[in-house]
Length: 422
Image 1 (cartoon, one colour):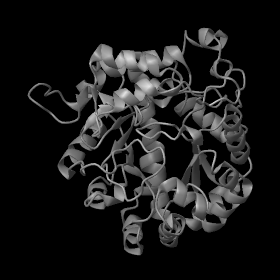
Image 2 (image 1 turned 30 degrees about the vertical axis):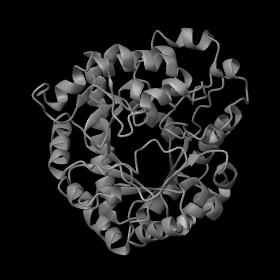
Image 3 (image 1 turned 45 degrees about the vertical axis):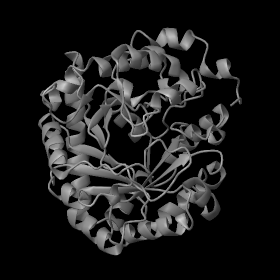
Image 4 (image 1 turned 180 degrees about the vertical axis):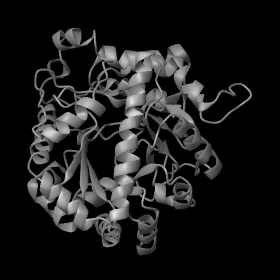
């Protein structure tokens, strides 16, 4: 399998782009994690991987979207983006996730990325703005990988994304990327309406045949003003997703991303481990994209002129969030204990960082739901390469140490909720 994957990458991707991936994201990314581990020993946290929402606007209206896509457009300016990346790179960072809204609606997106050839960018997109010309530009840049979201077949995609002809338009953008031999991925937010269509070998084989080099199946999370909880997977279906990912990693010549488990199959929260936090379009620093509350901003002000480094290292809100999350569950505290998160927000007087200003009420209304934490049902990696890579560069970094015994012996989310209740 590894040999087939290596051959695919050499044959189907521009060699210069492959080098950029291995150098900027691979080697430098590993070094940034090593710096993160060293900082943790000093009790300091500066995430080695930052996710940056550069715009709130989007052309689609997806079910369960928590972004204010229909609000007045807000973008991160090129100057603020440069300042943010400069300060993060000074801390050893080299990889950045670019999210939205729809990032390709930002008028300066590609020019902003072009000014940072020493970094690597993963752009989360619906693909509908990736024209042939833009795909050609992506190849010229070499340090950008589009991760294109496909949410189901023709019928399900229109329903999930609130517009017509979504699947065909998205696939056109995907084909443009592959035509220009850009390192391209496809992601899916797995929910009840698309799990049967996309969580299967036929879909994986189709992606491989097209030339897609990586994919990401992440579980649908009911957030936002219209959370659509009826789309949530049952605990059994969440376990099905994990089993499928592990099996396909060991079987298929395609990279399958997983951000919520270590090599032994133990669940983790990337925000709790401090490996990543989120910046919204207004510049607010948030624990993660679905925790839309903040105490600090990337923008300097008279009340807080500190550099980015100090804001991360000395944020009491982020520190207490990480501690609360790690001591409560190995899964997602937002889904499992929204009451504790609400109390933390009130304790720190964290502001609602949404345009709609209803995030507190949404949190108050949330019901307890299943996350990735399934105690005593861990599924270790079968692929040795994934297992070794996670052991060194993607694990819990010891943040759950001292909590694991209590968490594993406490009543699990499955027993609290019932195996299939919603």
